[in-house]
Length: 511
Image (cartoon, rainbow, N blue to C red; front, side, top):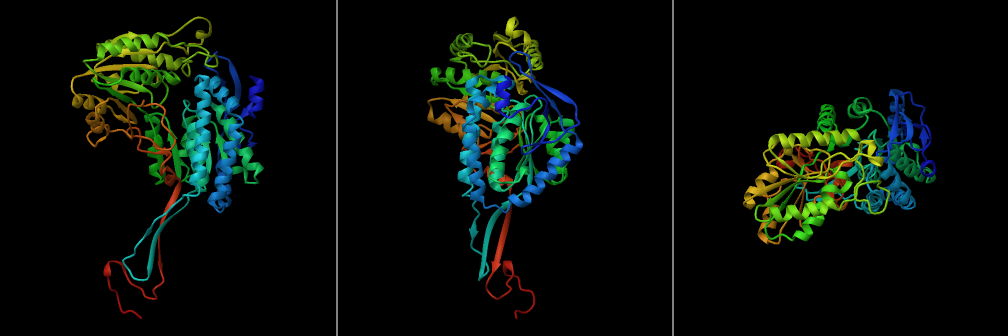
């Protein structure tokens, strides 16, 4: 473990404020990065204090003044080199993600691949920061739009994707001409340090200022609040829970800056009578159990036609029985621990609420004990039969709990599907063209992501990622999400020699 941390540029003890590669001496409290896999302390980190935080943001602002003048394709070249650097450290960083967060090795390396893919996407986008040209209503005038760098941006990320969500934001911010101040989750600080050190090392080798990529580690009520309220940061991108998003969003909006919020999901999947059940079982197994149910796109609600409910229930229980739970670095393990024992306790409270409401636990749900499991962070994934109206079903419990809900008509299924406060990802499994088109229509799914015969989990970076309602309305990653990181400017050039006013207004005599 010490060798792995050393290869990834992590020191013991580590500092919670980095300006590029430069560590600042911090005076905040010390936290421990504890692996949920075996409960061992990986490293101690001294969190950022107010002075260190201020120095980081100041450095990001100073670097921005230089970075904004670098042509966008050259900014893209830096991102390309960053992607190459991560290619060379994919296995090491993937292993650290597995150890510090708990997801299995394949998912850890897959997350690093997502970071690499995001670099590739951003490189192409650096040559496509397009504006629009429009026809002016005034003769001899040219009307067009263009985009400029916005400034230093704050990025707040959650524990479940320790580096990928940073990449969604940071790589687009870089090619847009912005600098980045990253506040990672205190549950996975080492992943953030490793990623920033690797990327900032590339920037330093290319001769760019150290403040392009920065990290501040500290509690949300301190460092998070400072980021949200900081007038020097025109954009705050925050990924996490709905309560966190409400707080960050309200503070950012109060100073008339931009919040980009990607919050909770309570993702539903409708299964129609003619669906391919082999496809459904495979999709649901990973969608509900992957990352131990701790993805914002995890399948949480399975809304199943009553005509096939019992058949699908039996097949899913059989599939769940085959899930091997254990050390995420071992071959054959499909599910590692939850992030900590508190997450398991939250899961147990939700299950108690289900049974109190009249629901049935069909399989699993119990905490696991003995040997490796004695960390308290392991639990068996769970399948429950519930009513759509249960209050607990309308909440996002960040745990491997799958709610199965019966329906009679497709209209009832859509009603159940949309009757939750969240609106991130959704899916329908069907071979009926009319059902699939209804699901994708304005009368169908009310989510930001809607899939047909595809799991809710595992979105590609080419499409904009985010959702509606309490999910926050923000969009990250692909498509035209880059526009959030730039300031839009409408320009008019008058080459006519006259001073014509718009809308045909006449004011005084023309010379």
